[in-house]
Image (cartoon, rainbow, N blue to C red; front, top):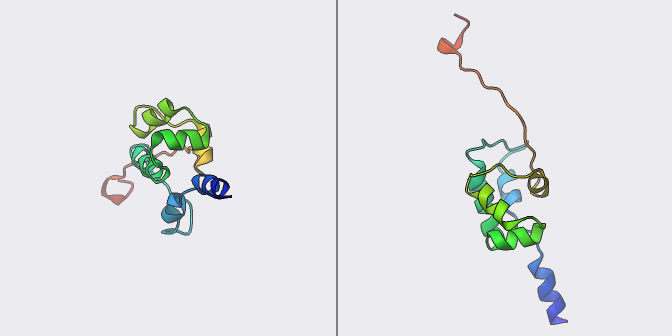
Length: 99
C-alpha cells in the first residue's frame, strides 16, 4: 500500500555520485582537503549527516567528523560511496626540466 511505497522512496540513493562522475570518462580524483566538501554535498542529498549515517549503517559522529575534515573517512564509508584511498607522490620541478 501507500506506506510500502513511501518506505521504498525513502531508501532511494541520491544521484550525487552520478552527477560527479558524469563530467568525466574515468575515475574522479580529489585531494584530502576537498573530500569533506564532497562528503557534505552527498550528505545534503540524503537529508543530512544523521540520515546518511542511518542509510549506510555508519556512526553519525564519525561521519560528521569526516565531513568537517577532523578525521579521515573510514574504509567502510569510502566503499559505500564508491571511493577508495590512494597514495600519491607529487614532485615540483623547477623550470620544467632537469636543471
